[in-house]
Image 1: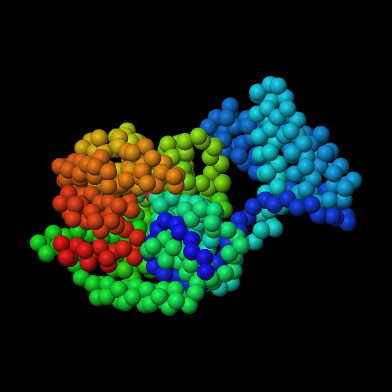
Image 2 (image 1 turned 135 degrees about the vertical axis):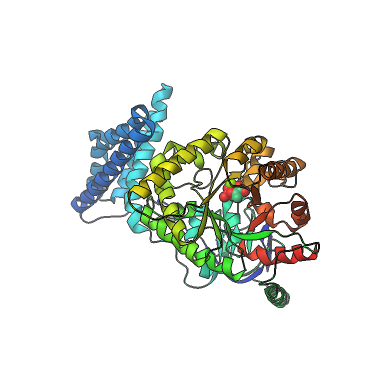
Length: 539
Ligand code: PEP
Ligand code: MG
């Protein structure tokens, strides 16, 4: 038996086989081909597709960021059509009778090396462009080759790390637990594990290696321990622990239908955080009073291209209908930072957490924003929908958002499409700037929801993704708690309500403090609603 130690993200015991997560990585293997002509045709088809992708990128960049910035895609097209580059690939295929991927890989390495060896810094930088263009070409083959990662039975997923987009694409019913080499406790992958109610241990380090693929293991989520090839004694003990957990869950069931009220009569709303429609079941099973945070960006993360208005409308409508009149707060697109979506073609940034993300993307791409807003407004005719906006730092942003919302409403009226005229609008309080001007912001909106994950990150200047900083990431820091208090006082001074939807909302050691601050709502992973209700009723 081997015991590995990591950081606990979500409790619970899981017993099953380990399966290592395999990415759709572009792996270039040299393969002999009998028919070089056919291989050259494969290369040319891929090239045409890559060229048309680049044309789309160029067109989009032209409208979004102007001609000067769009030029890069034109340059990439020229590189792809460069006769020397093409001759090199086709020659390698012909003379060596090898596959196109291999010929592209060799050509890319050769050309990049030539650029890198040049004296001029500008020319050296072009090596990255050659690699980028070649990777785009290679990805055309990869799309077909790599069927998605499949699980044939329920397994413990092991990985070096998982991106949020990868996590959401896994078949949840087959995932017993997540264990990862890297990862930070505040990352979106960790948050997803909590939402999915799946035991998770992260930051295990290099001791978690693929040699454990297929081995029987036990994950003790609470202790952050993994037992590989467990001996009989541990198996018996862990099965017992599992049974105790099950009993506790059943006990919590008895709290269903009961009020979230303290002994002195103070009430608070308990809502659920969800990432997509399939999480609504868990919200309902756990007696959520509403949805306090629908992370709508997961609709984008799960898609291969921008989800259409219809697609989004269908999802929002379904959630509104399933929640049957209970409040559903849809947070508009919060892409960027760790939530990267390839087809957004966002530039690589040195400081992505402080970069073009969330509302900043929506305000620079109003058409994208309007599509989402139209879908949300349309869904408002089917339930009690509220909208909230992430990463707000100024009153002018909120006013601009309102103008855009008005344009969307005018458009819907002109099209004769029904929507509710009682949609509440709110903002997330997740930057120190928003806290400091919360009195002004409160005049503009109906409610606040504190995103403590980002508020902690930006207040303490700690990258929430960096696992080496987990010990510094202190969301109980007095500065963070004072900020929540300040936002609450300012919201209430303007007669508005305030909730918390970051992970801190589920921290039972702070529940009493939040009640003292008169927080009106806590929105948490569905599995945390009943433990919170228990805590509140005991206070
Ligand atoms: C937060 O920042 O606390 C929050 C709820 O938003 P997200 O975790 O999705 O960034
Ligand atoms: Mg956030």
